[in-house]
Length: 196
Ligand code: HEM
Image 1 (cartoon, rainbow, N blue to C red):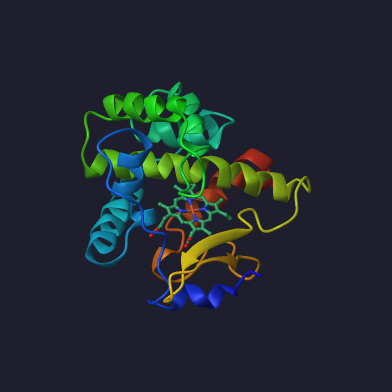
Image 2: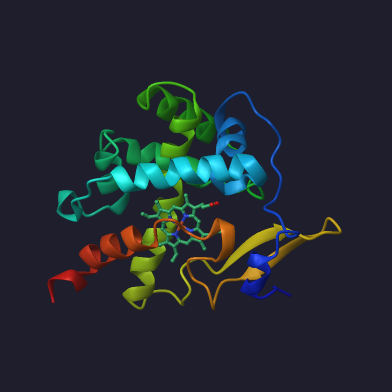
């Protein structure tokens, strides 16, 4: 049974820990805000918010929100294919494919090298990819709300638990989505809502 979203405010429920990794998806997971806690989370969260603040986004650039985001981050539209491959292996409960590892390496190259900023840029793209498409599908009536139905935490006694996001579609607490406004703008553009 899934727990309610208020658990996301409880510091004793932490994001699933990820092992350190030197390359590929393991490296990405170990560097991103999404799977960090404590001081690493605060530092990476500030970096992520800075990147988002600096973005100049024009939704008219492309139908794909991921392409719009990539271009605004200074990357070529073609990275969308690698972002999709990584997204399918990103969450720690998903198996990592060789294709996803190679896609991370190509993205690292495109972003100018392996550092925390590169990880933050890839994290923005991967977090945006499936979630924004799901938000657009929800708005079109093609899938039930919320777009991201559950997230996961590890309880104080070490148990992996699911958290129901019905009452908090963009999460809440320290890991709440830092891009809810941007995601809404992109989904509005894709569904034509911004034109009415
Ligand atoms: C431009 C599009 C998006 C970007 C760049 C983005 C980025 C992010 C990032 C970086 C995080 C991790 C924050 C942290 O751990 O401190 C996050 C978390 C989250 N995002 Fe988004 N996101 C986007 C769209 C969406 C959409 C459309 C939804 C669903 C309505 C969504 C739902 C969430 C949720 C529920 C979390 C929290 C997960 C948790 O606490 O376990 N995001 N997002």
